[in-house]
Image 1 (spheres, rainbow, N blue to C red):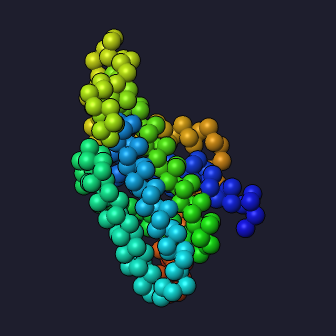
Image 2 (cartoon, rainbow, N blue to C red):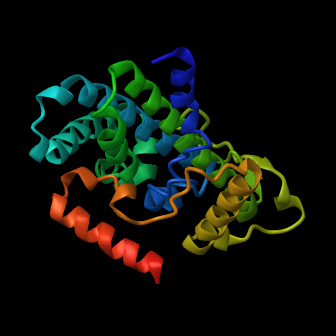
Length: 247
């Protein structure tokens, strides 16, 4: 693969194929951990570490994995790295470990990580898989930080509040709106998360203009697990889709 192609692999995950805003994957941890910049950054870095490491290992052993059991094998590899990250955070970054809570072990079933393992790492070289993991992880982290900044600003009236992984204990953040009006607590709740998510997604789609990667059909061709289906199932699905299009 040329340097230009590798550059595209790395940058695609940031905007053009952003896993959250374009591919619409990992919505649950996105809404749950984007209540502030601190938690969004922590979740993004943890998921990126797992994504990069699992992509590398899966790319290295892809020829050794039988096709029929590749999904369980991918999940086993991902679960191993999630356990390592979880133990490291618990030992050295206790505040972040407590802040992420249940969503840290749930990285195992994050659709972004399993999707990249199935669609990219299992079919490409180690270097390309590493770049893909870094790009997707960076796109995921940036999205969480942007949403976290908006929700934190309107929810509390300040930015960067928190102990920042134990490095800035007692820091109350930078007051912005809090001087003029109280924070809107709904922005730190689930409805506020959906609202900010929709606004950010709409803004990205409006300014990029390139909607070629946005999924327009829901047939087997657009499914990450299409390879696991039998030929009969694919033919049946394709036939039903064709009939719907004709109608």
